[in-house]
Image (tube, rainbow over all chains, first blue to last red; front, side, top):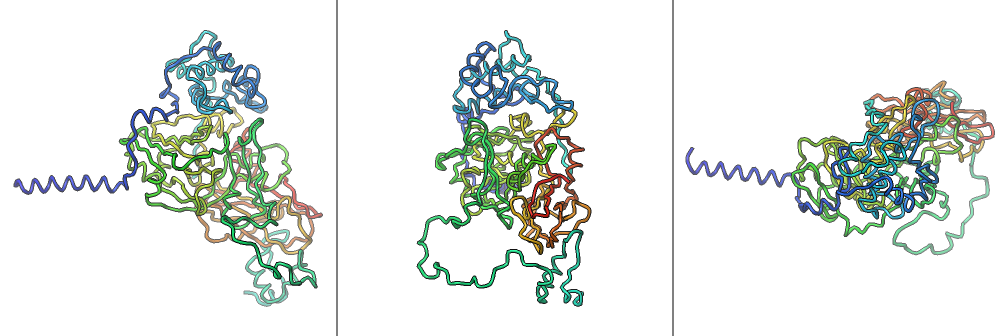
Length: 176
Length: 426
């Protein structure tokens, strides 16, 4: 191949590359910086991906709970006026209505951290510190008999908590 | 066509207890033999044709944004909110007072998990990140420069009709029992186009969609759905999406349960696995009799409901009525709707009003001559995939009664001899 034709080939390759880029769309999105993403990415995967630094114990959580959660979720997570958080183990099968709580039904402890941090308390969502979210999560898990009073919840321990109903779900298969 | 029969005013029965072949019926009307068919319920009395005051004075001035007639004030949503909250709950569409297939935006059902945010569109951003080559931030102005598409689609809450799982029929009508479904024309940018620009990693199989409401409502969506027909919706019925339906940006996933159509969309995270959010584990899963729960029940399966007659719309005397209702399926187009006036003993095919669109509400109609006796009205939808709406008994035999989600069994309205219409199991 002569030098000019090699140049033409290289130029064509560049053209193909750039037009392929344009063909993907108007390109009006701005590239997000890692800091921006970190400030917005509040979701926690079931493997614990995304859990922040921090820690909390059931005892610390009891204090947070009394102040921020009890009015809606009742003494020790018993429920009323809003969702029951504790109890219901063994109620899912049989004739009676299932009592679906964090302890009896939720398959992943990471979901508890994710949801409390993003949505609770209802009147002031995203107001709890990460330590407070770990602590109140620990308290709910301890009330359900899933972790001990001395256990510490953090980014390493929370994803390792074995939830009782972890294997209670079947992925739906569409009829179509 | 049997002209002799039409001339006598008779119309072929299409099924038992007065269901009529609609095509023949209107042919009969054209021959002037309608009197033989109808006893004229609600007909105008003689001597009423006067020149009304609104013909003798100048009408109202212009307004910037029109409202329904003051005589239509009863056409409104009803709602319930969790204890101690003002908008953590749902409002329901009054389908018994509407017709056609498009739900007016102000009457579209709502389901909020922590109220309706008041979002400044100038400040709103959409972040696309996770397993992508280039994480991207979009302003609404930027998104609006992308090629747009429109499609008419229903959205149905996973909890719609959930009361029909209860042992005894809950007193209520179309709105209270089945009002968590609506249909609109949605316009926006294909999610696939934006994901294409970000460059999806081959390992990715899911996306997490997250709202900018106080609850940060979030759901995992299969990447295949995101790349297929998902729309970043900016417009609803021609105007910007209403705040109660996700202003300024809503994820539309045609045919998928309502909760996944994330409102106030602020973030799409491309992931390898589902995130297992609160609303796809503790909620929106179907508890089965053996204690297990079905998870990721995404498509809304074929369903229909008669909107008229229905509870609250009492019959006005014997004679001719149109039975009218809505059918829909997350699997595609409605292929057929059958209607029964005798509790499912016999069925007549209803007329499907054009256009029949995939994953949109479809209006069906059938003519009925009520003879004043008891009747049980039912409708049964079949979609283009061949899926047939099950009876309530069949659905419960398969899934039990421990759930409130995805009830799509056949619903029954009883018409009593007094003309009152009530919800029953039949």
